[in-house]
Length: 315
Ligand code: NAP
Image 1 (spheres, rainbow, N blue to C red):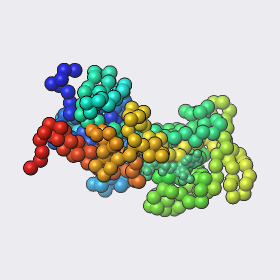
Image 2: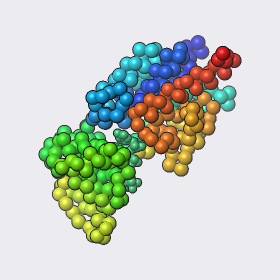
Image 3: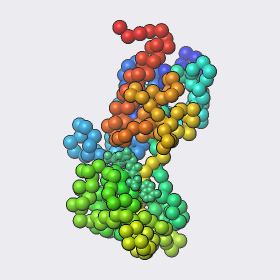
Image 4: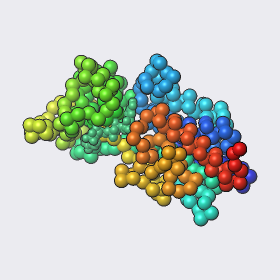
């Protein structure tokens, strides 16, 4: 790619954070290229119904919202590439060299919006029965288990929220959590408590997932309070035990003890010109609305950063 055609920024990831950054940057007259290896939407895609995104008084599906985010960013001139970035190098002159299947880019700003991937539980049988009853996405796989007995593992917003979705598919949902209390938002826990299709079992861990080689048939638990192990029949196991930030492309960015990229209030990282937004950064609250907000803040600051590089200042 020739020097004249270089964009102002590369945004890695087309979830709500990346697409919001693209929209704000493009609307501010910057040329923003977004790279996404899958479909736009990120984690939002696996949310069946979002009822807390401002402006939507009727719940909106994660997919529908993601499409709107992408269309809006493109409408303002952002370019979305559906390709995985090969590498990002921070050069001595402060620029970033970004290698992609669509060419090599030299840019002053990179916005990392790579999100986080689902964490595995790490018990025997989990890998063996993935796609045969073990799942990490209720919206994708829940409908295969109509009126079957489903186990949900975890105690955060994902486990509790997705158990509510699964309870519409079957009247036999059991949620197990290793602590005495769920860490999910109170509103979600309240809905679970009033859902007669959901049984909550606290102080329980999963020892192993069992099956007949073709599909999951049962799960072996440890009941912490009673200090005993037991097996119980289940048709499916949905695992929501947190996420791991995707930071592999920018190992030079400083992270916290959990691996999330450290940022300041303007989404700036430890590296000038490198921003991190959404689930990949060290934020206390991971929502679509906070991801979108991160993107807007990063794009705004990046515009000032680029102006400063060009010797221009706002009046
Ligand atoms: P999370 O908040 O990190 O919760 C993970 C849950 O899994 C915790 O309850 C944790 O237990 C449990 N856990 C972790 N490792 C485990 C293991 N080895 N065995 C058993 N249990 C284990 O993850 P999340 O629920 O996926 O949410 C991720 C982020 O997205 C959060 O910031 C959340 O607020 C956000 N989110 C928001 C919404 C929404 O607002 N609608 C929906 C989904 C996600 P402990 O409690 O004991 O640590």
